[in-house]
Length: 146
Image 1 (cartoon, rainbow, N blue to C red):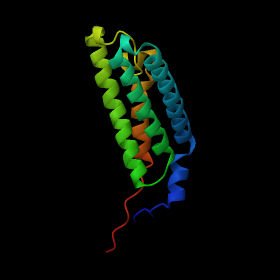
Image 2: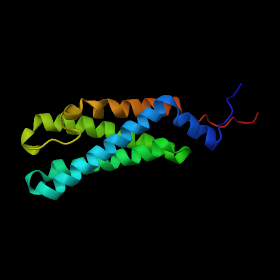
Image 3: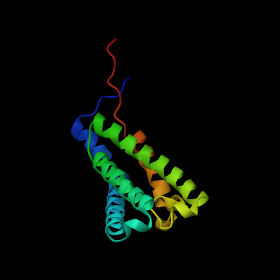
Image 4: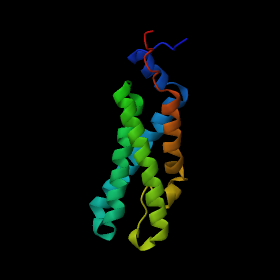
């Protein structure tokens, strides 16, 4: 028997329940932390490590998009949330690897450098948890009429 398609309100309730609420809160904290850090770095010492500071700002934008779309319901928000968590995972792996292989390119840390070691590796684990949550709470496809 096919599963009933959820309404937008039911979808939102599922996404915001228990672990989803914690995930959204952690993403919100990281959006704030990365944005504040990038703002201070860009505003006070941009000339010292422009690549690192722009990457911190980019990470903040990704966290903001993930926070908003994880909290919203609907297929479009779901797709954007999956995309932002995927970009975050790719970014933390790519920047983490690059920052360890070319330390001169990162004279100052970013949220994603060293795989998020400055943040207890949460930036590495967070997108995996986000993608897992999105997969578990995805909206079932509408049942085809026979």
